[in-house]
Length: 455
Ligand code: PHE
Image (cartoon, rainbow, N blue to C red):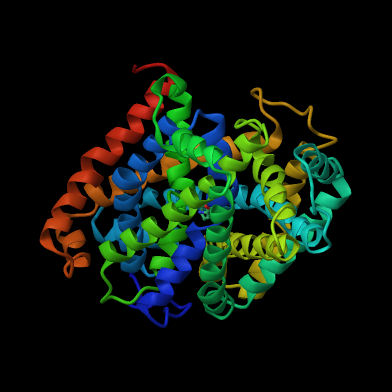
């Protein structure tokens, strides 16, 4: 199969739209909900440092590789990988890499939607003033009342999935471009407001800075390193084809290096700001850094409950968080949709219904893992924890490893040079070293360490 010059789904109207959409994919629950709680569970500073190193040495080169493959293939990840492999006279089984991405996106969205649903519930809790003057205990019990009730979680999960699939059915451009342009900057403003509020806690703010930025390697385990690396993939939406599929709608004359660096910096900033907003509250209220997935839901209401106009700002914050989650959710399911439309010749609308329903159904596992199914344990993990671990810490890094090998070793130097023709030559050379040696070596060593073979 040869590759079309243009994707059948159309192209982004400009380089900026791509940057916004890809940033919309990257910035989401991963930054605001997940990063603070896993940093808290894994001891802070050293974990954060490893995470930052992974963004720089693994994340950015891989993002460049994914965009490049998508733009060269101009189709869904499965077909793009296949047609590029064919063109290079390499085996077609590389398309299975596209498949594993489609699967990972579907698995992630199933639990992502349940957490986004919790954020949705919090929009209404906040606007209605429930958090006014709330104490740490109060915030904790409001959260457990929500997660302990399967019906409510199910209802919000359903609402989130329906909204997501409606936007997906309308096409990437219609729904996405507009929402990202206005909502992301607004989210940033409220985040800054929260950091400002937390900065007023004085010493606790310094304590939070120490916690996040003073590495104490005695607190970091091999497993923690894997989680930090996995999160670098998760937060940048790498290793599963989301960025690849967006790259397939990218015009030729765009600098891939520049957009990748821009997106990665924006994404990292949001995560660090979230950490700076949350940890001072954790320390000021005697909460535990290792509180787990409920961390933002148990800390931020305290801030909103004690600031002027807090009910409004809180409501807006959770509203914008839900929008950020939406723009990520869309990209999680887009590889599957693009594949269904291109290969099965069904309409976008129908593809959305099928994929959405399947994801919703699988999401029930996560809904119940917070309540009636909290004792369904496999490999020492609840269903939600298992889905998260399997995707973020195993599937995405393995997918990323394969993408690195594909772009560094399977694709000829001529082809990659052609795609990166407009980049500074030194960028290209650096990229090729990173993607051929550093990325594969780093991912492999972290894995071997956790399995117990190295270290
Ligand atoms: N990057 C998104 C976030 O941080 C999640 C995501 C992962 C989206 C993988 C797409 C692909 O919330």
